[in-house]
Amino acid sequence: MKELMGFLKPYWKITLLAPLFMMLEVSMDLLQPVLMAQIINEGVMKGDLDTIQRTGGLMILVAFIGLIGGAGCTVFSSTASMHFAADLRKKVFDKVQSFSFQNLDMFKGGSLITRMTADIVQLQMFVMMVLRSIRSPLLTIGSVIMAFTISFKLALIFAVTIPILFIILFLLIRKAFPTYNIVQQKLDKVNTVLQENLMGIRVVKAFVRSDFENKRFGQANEDYTKNAVKAARIVSFNMPVLMLILNFSLVVILWFGAHQSWNGSLQVGDLIAFINYVTQVLFAVMMIGMMMITISRSKVSADRIQEVLHTDSNLVDDKYAAHQAIAKGEVVFDNVSFSFDGQNEVLKDISLVAKPGQTVAILGATGSGKSTMVQLIPRLYDTTSGMVMIDGTNVRNISLEHLRTSVGVVLQQSILFSGTIRDNIRYGKLNATQAEVELAAKAACAHEFIINMPEGYDTVLGQRGTNLSGGQKQRISIARALLVRPAILVLDDSTSAVDLGTESRIQKALGELLKYSTVFIIAQRISSVMEADKIIVLEDGRISAEGTHEQLLKDSEVYQEIYCSQLGKEDVVYE
Image (cartoon, rainbow, N blue to C red; front, side, top):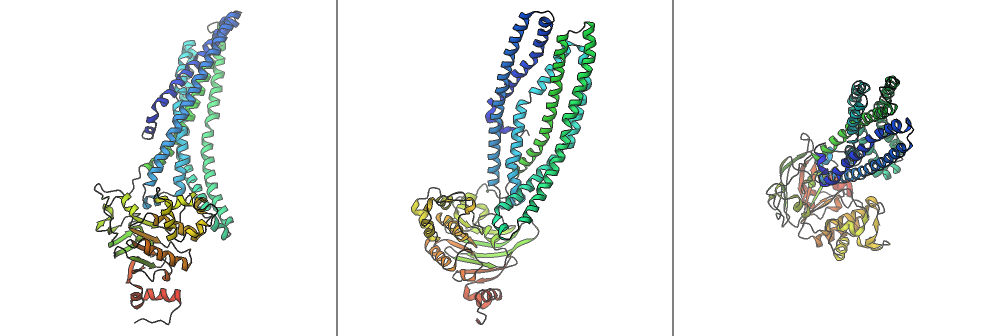
């Protein structure tokens, strides 16, 4: 909590004003029972109307001042807590942006959403409560002092009731704390299922799996609800037990206080004032109890937020990282191996040289490691052993910003963002001119369908580009990568949704626009890679064959099988 409270430092003025205004309100609250006792003792009991009017007017003034104090505290505490939450949310978001793919694999998407929403909101409420929490201890201390000044004997009741209250609070908090941790984990699961369902809703409907998804979400929702109810059930004992103690204390006070009043040792007004102070004390202790329960929930949220903030990316710039290391775009894999978990190797002893201007195609069965291999080039992952070098420099020794702006990547899944088509194309180059945007779109064979849309390049895309076809999304993704004119371009099965004719035109445009760039193409169709300068065949994470189309047809059985299965030319024999 101490570390997170550092986010309040920029707002120290309003953070300080909140408890000061609360002190003003508490002071006024402590005055009210004294003034009430004066009205009863000096006004009502003696029939002094002037005292009643004068003291009553003073009570109204005191109440108005207390109102100002309470309102001021609410305004300042709310403002400070909202700024705290906004800055913390931004910090967590920035931290997530720095994560590598391996870091992101540690946290589920639903969990990160929960942490940046529900957990931060919980901390926001905690901060607001803390800035107002001075009320309860001040009111408790002040009321106890005032009660002792009225009747020392009656005030001894506090010596019994207050310890009992705190023992009950301690037991409740001890029981509730682990339960709230489970509740947040179950909420993670709900958000994960929800996110997966909404992202894949078209697949769900296409395969008529709504009933299955309903059951899956229902199970996650039921688990969350069951644990949330369990936590709420534990906390629910707080109020009834504390009210029982409060009412019992009032009965005892009225019993002994009435005897003192009849004996003349305690005036009626003082007895009423004493009861008010006792009520304030017990209600303040109840608020402390609720505050402690909120703290236990906030502690869980704080731990989850700090887990993100304390997770360092395993991809960091070397202190002497080069910023101008990429000029030509020669890529060398030198005995590269890679494992996600440090045990099972996905890639094994990969050695490869891609010269500037070459087009290197990678073929292989699903799970052979094709995507993982090209993701090592821009350091989306780091090699387990061996080196990936660009222009003779290990990618670990090139600054991440320079490396990734020099390597254009079009991933398997076309990710578009809410906004216009123009905004999506120039996502990697915000200052690109319209002419540059159109040139990239033409090279990606996207210009024609864009200008035929009602708003052209100003057409607003739905979330994840839902108002475009799969092939259109792929072409816009390719245009986005081409716009930055990268020294190295990686196309990870990025033309799978376009027809062969369009794919051929795209490849021709790539040859003209990026004639000096090194291009890596992952493809499922052998017809997409026949013109490549070099074709790599991956099998079980190893390079089983390497060469041109003609060479592989002669020397590689795996390539021959792929060729025959896709093009049906089983009678063709190469010697």
